[in-house]
Length: 127
Image (cartoon, rainbow, N blue to C red; front, top):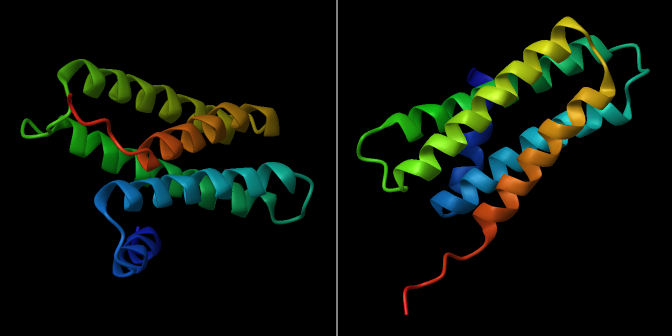
């Protein structure tokens, strides 16, 4: 936990906005999984996989906590959709740990990168 907290704090020091910070952290989570996937046959795969899965779980747990807050400004339907997505990711990550397969990581990597891309876009202002 301390490792991800330090990474989060270090990025925050760079002066990123909340959305940019979230995008950066979730991109890092996706990159960690992608590196494991691309280096699947290395001797230290198990350790790297566990490290990447734990980091992803922490990131998504943070999102879950934020989305569960009654004061969260996102529309209720969007919060529910993202929470459901996070449950899918939790399930997939546990599945990968139980039955390792590099292809099982693809969907989580794609979701992480797509969420990060969405966070990096500027919200449209009402007309």
